[in-house]
Length: 507
Ligand SMILES: Nc1ncnc2c1ncn2[C@@H]1O[C@H](COP(=O)(O)OP(=O)(O)O)[C@@H](O)[C@H]1O
Ligand SMILES: [Mg+2]
Figure 1 (cartoon, rainbow, N blue to C red):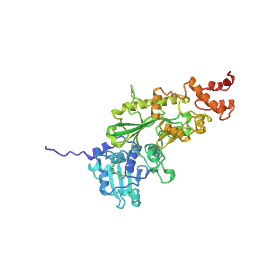
Figure 2: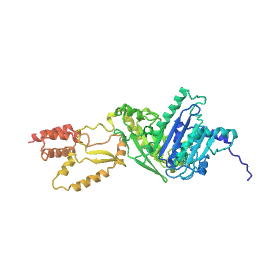
Figure 3: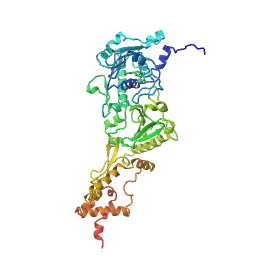
Figure 4: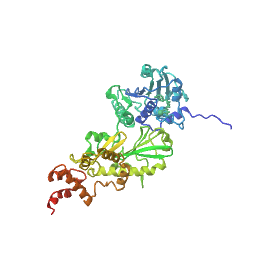
């Protein structure tokens, strides 16, 4: 077939690439993704205000690139988006370095160094490209950039990404002494910091080998702390069991969280909990790809009969959704890595799950007292205790509960056998089943015996009461008082009050 070559105009294409809709923080996050993919343990981000000479620089200690690799990395579409990626790779389209950088600046310089090799430098200058309408990749640093790229010479390996001519961050007519422009610059940085703390929180707060991100300095006070959207460490946060959903070869994991009512948080925690964009905005699904947050709170187009919008009543509902990078196409991950859409086969299940989390969150928001972990009565002897384990929540039968203690204390009883039985029960609590059943009944968990004392409750309570008075030698009054502090009998004060007196009055 006859053909002619019709390559895109470099000038036009590069200007189009600038308009993908990055924010400062999403652009910086894309650069940090590359650092993480290159195995960096430490990433330094410097923002320098200097009017039109302002710059932003990201320095990592990853494996770096040699000359040829760097040239390849600087090309738009460096890698085939359809290629299978390493499971830990945060990239996809081979565009991020360029599109993210060009969205913020007109000059992108990269200095990089592989261990044992000399440093390599490449520069895209959009003014240069515009003048010549050619993809001219400059192969040495611009004179004015040399001091800013200099640190690479002293690093054993790593990469420096430098943005200058920040026409999208700094107003083009801003002078270095312009206080208003400087404030606007600083405000954008503060916002970027809050977002980075959220996007990378699972890297920043990883229990082993956490990523260090340093902002504008190398001291301990410059270290970025992660922001956990789920307040997992807070005792008043409730959660659904983690669910694994499969479709095709891919498994995703999802877990719902109902955050504490404001009354349960001090002022600082309440402010912090709202996250970078505030409580209402931060509700919904949090989609993570390889632990990197893509979507910071969104209902993902789910909802019935209409799509859910972000509403005040659901501000305490947040769900964590983990997807692997092999699911990119199915989830329609975009170049900016800021949107994701659940594949059709999963939408029904995710909607059901979110529906329940939303209902619970609404209840907590409206009346805190009626749901969620209540302030435990300090003296109440509970039958079950819940605690956090590495792999999730675990539930234990309290050996000190009088009904349990009684059996364990019985002379001649094999404690091993009882202990073995209790452990089996504890390890097989049908948490998931209970959770579904509870949610289906609109959150009214059937706890303890039913509300009106039956003969069964009476006989169990009576047996305990007799144990208290005979084996333990308590007075009737003390035995009643103890029973009133013992779950679930504390719910039956009239029944408890009738013991002893009634027995005594029997003919
Ligand atoms: N900080 C870095 N350290 C090492 N290699 C990098 C770094 N940044 C970019 N690269 C290389 O450049 C390539 C292109 O990066 P990018 O344009 O962001 O696309 P993608 O991340 O989708 O591959 C990466 O695949 C990687 O090989
Ligand atoms: Mg990338």
